[in-house]
Amino acid sequence: MKNKTGLWLRGVGVLLVAALLTPALAQPKKEGVGSPLGIPREKLITELNLSPDKAQEFLAVGGKYDQTRQEVIGRIKKNESELEKALQAPQPDEGKINQLVTALISDHDALFETFKAQRQEEMALLTPVQRGKFLLALKKWHEEMIQKEKKE
Image (cartoon, rainbow, N blue to C red; front, side, top):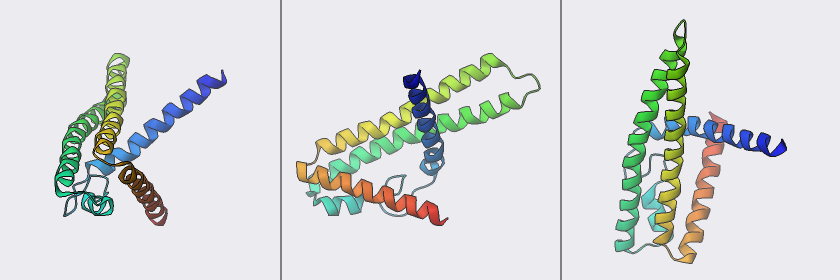
């Protein structure tokens, strides 16, 4: 029973994170080369001391996943809109709601998989020292985002 509760809580947590990330991901990029989450790739390239060839590969990986995520986010927005409409009906169609919920969960999973796959591809381009610096830079960025959210 305890394992099921923990699993359920983790699932809810994942969905909450997805719900919080989705609007941020859909926002347009600012000037310069950066990811939709605001991690400036050019800054990472400098911090990691990547060669010009590795920098191009690193940017290409990010661009590939940015495009994929935009497609997934588009589907998420469409399904969320349809779900809102379906739930507002006087007699909500449970079959339609189940279909939309399943599609949303699938798209949230796909969104998270893009982050995982991107990280794996980026890490494959790096030396062990660069990998360590990369992970610490992501940690630092995450902490900065949390502080920024607290201020707003």
